[in-house]
Length: 287
Image (cartoon, rainbow, N blue to C red; front, side, top):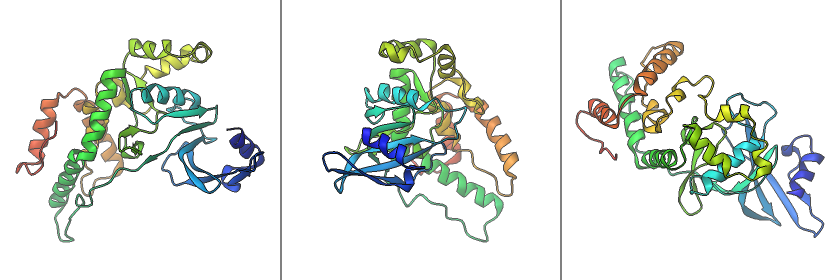
């Protein structure tokens, strides 16, 4: 990591210089990777031409009010990793996290929209609903659902940004969450259990403001106020399809209204909802 620090100091941006020579003659190469993250960049690492099973996550200059500081994100990830809910963290600083490398989950290519150009708006909407449900109930999505439920039950922690890009497989094929910037605790008791597990020097950095942040709804995401298992939150909110011809602003408003209603649904209500969308029961429910 001294090498990485030197790289950061010598380059205006990491992308402008990809390698550095160590005192023992080794060559470390740091290469930007494609990432959908808005507030960080990801880099692969190779040593003497051999790619290493690690990645480096570097914070962008533009910070988000929704995300915890990067050093705190690393601590949350380390806590989750102890229960195999996240990749192992080897080192972190104020601006970077060195952690175990993961791989993308396989996606079933058969689950795709099949809409004829002559289809009516109603037919288009029904096809969108069919595909949304199929995607939500396919094995990969079921694995994400189980992971989030297990983490919620064991640690009292949930991900307020549980989109598909934030879940990957480790090199052994185990599903893990890879981004903990928007993780929150469902209660003070759950947060205190994590807090008391921290080393004293780290504990002193978790101010009362940060503790409040970790136990409060995420700004701009009112659905996170429910603090219930993700089965009744973000995973299912992806099923809300945009109607054909509907303005995006109207869609967003309707989506928030639906989310607030569905925050209180039981698992049985979700099953009934799926049956309504899938009257022929062509998709086997996995929960």
